[in-house]
Length: 199
Image (cartoon, rainbow, N blue to C red; front, top):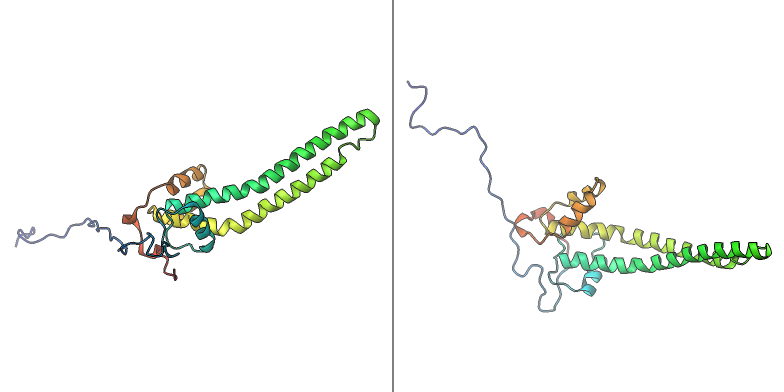
C-alpha cells in the first residue's frame, strides 16, 4: 500500500487563522434617544462640553464601557480649566513671597530692620499653601474618574485598557495621547469591555 495515500485529505501542520468575531452593537448605541440623552452605560457621540463634564463625574469609577472622543477631551478641557484656579493662586503666592524677599532686602539696606516685606511674604506663603492644597485635593478627587475615562476611551478606539500602563514607560505618555485621540473602532470591540450596569 502506498505510503502517500493519494486522493485522501491531508491534515495541515499549520494552524488556520480564525475570523474575528464582531460584537453586535444595538441600533442607536451611543446616540441620543427621544429624551435627548444617552444612558450612562453607553458612549455619547457628538456630546457637548457641559454634558461631557457632568458624565465625567457621574461615571466616577466605571472602568468598563466606552467613551467617545468628545466625552474624553471635553472633560479633559474642563479639568484643565478647574486646575487653573489653584495654579493662579499658587503663582500669586510665589510672586508675593519673591516680592516680599526683595522688599525685606531693600528695607534692611535702608533702615536695617528688614521688616518691609514681612507682611507680603507671610501673605504669599498663605497663598502658596492654599494653592498647593487645592491642587492636591483636585488631583486626588479626579484620579479615579480620569483613569476610568482613559480606559473607556481606549476601549472605544479598539484598545485594551491595559495599554494605559504605557504611561509608566519612557515616552509612553506620548503613545497614550495618540491612542486616546484615535477614532471609534467598533470592529475591535470586545464583549467584556461593555458596561453592563444600569444606564
